[in-house]
Amino acid sequence: MNHLITWEEPFCGAGNNCFRIGTDGAGSAYIAVSGAEEHYVTDSREALRALIRDIKAGKADHLL
Image (cartoon, rainbow, N blue to C red; front, side):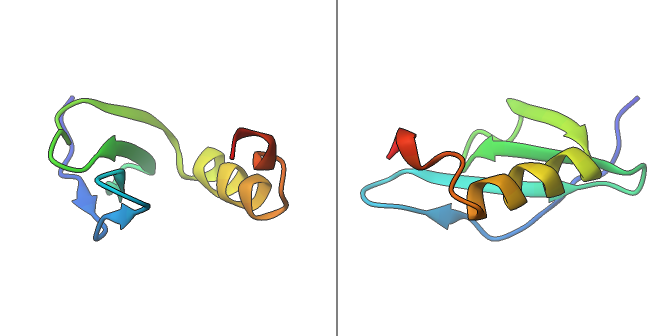
């Protein structure tokens, strides 16, 4: 089933590394590379909240 995805403005790092986060009315969240939104990763909004909390807490710092 296709849902209308509402995309946030891109989050961009150095260079052209831009990601977009979106949500739909069915409670799903989406992450995609800016300009390629048709190729996204999706999960629940709660999973997106947990991902953002973990990143803010430093759990992905080893990837920097």
